[in-house]
Image (cartoon, rainbow, N blue to C red):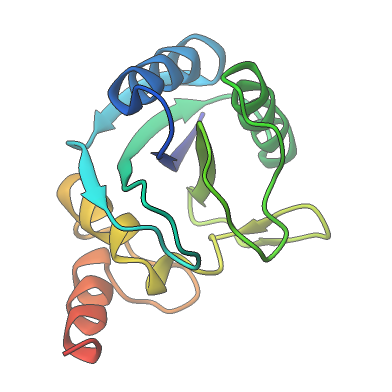
Length: 157
């Protein structure tokens, strides 16, 4: 079993219901949940929108390989109304599920990069991740979630 951390976000429709449904589908199809953060309301990141996001981070145990995990998260997104995946330009969405970590594995393929390459730049990811895994060590940067969040907050001042 692998421990994985996923980031979920939504800024369309009933945001709480979107997240709750995604969490239930993840638990049913990916693996048992070991931890789920509170909801965090944040402004859009990387694009302009009148719709704030609701975000959370969860940890679960899975038997899926990294590629199978990616495929399953994309199926869940589609089933919950996601019509297109971001390719460098972001837009409003019903649901977004990003793989943050898969144990301490480092993966770099054309379809998948783990750890998520932008997680250290996103407070909307680091804040909920810090709630459930403050001491988790980033396998490339060798910094804890707590350290990365502190550095991000200090750099934005």
